[in-house]
Length: 334
Image 1 (tube, one colour):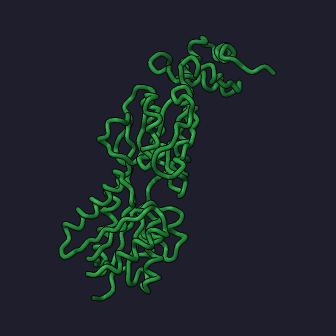
Image 2 (cartoon, one colour):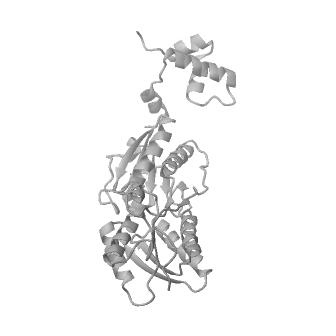
């Protein structure tokens, strides 16, 4: 059986081929009535019509492919970002090429012989921003995820309200009675981690008689265990709460506590950030901040298609939510 054409759809729907092209190309608004548009879509569906995307893309100068640049896939957050981006892309007949920076962070080679010929735009995590160096010459629309919203190199920014997430964590610990804190910070020069540190410091400035230490560690349980061990054994008031920049770092802090003979949460409260699958796999389960990773991916793809269509993307920060589990409790008696 021959594959139905746009001419077949036009004949069955009682409209012109031009009307079919407008409706199925989503260019009908103000030019074709909603009733006619619905009839064309219904007819195309009944006939099993599928547009020739290759021909249409060649006509429009589009590949209908987006590049998603993320750190190496060492946690499930970026896998969930990809899931959201791919789901949204499918609604627009787009494909998504996932390109993890091979070393996790830092520069990587351009994955294409010609980026401009291979993709329509880039969605990139700020944690893999240096990977973009090879693509800058391609003059492609760029959407940055979790990045400095004042950075003019990006056409759009999709951010999480990480400052509010850290404020929620810090206020939760203050309410429990904690006054001596350790911030186990990610050893990464990135807007998102700078913002988290500033939020902790700002929240503690309004609370009396508090102390704050900061130690830096890579996003690794082994390295964060070593950093936490050193910070917790430094002379001075021992912290009763550890605020971590990520769940992986928090897992390392819990290991450090156990090796120092401290019980979590009775001697030491530990909090994470991200709400990875890891957060409920450790014992005790982590109090953390849930980040809507799938929505980040969806919003990134929405922003890219808006840029490609000449529209202004939505730019409000996505909300974060405190999830209280078993790793936090009031501090031990003085």
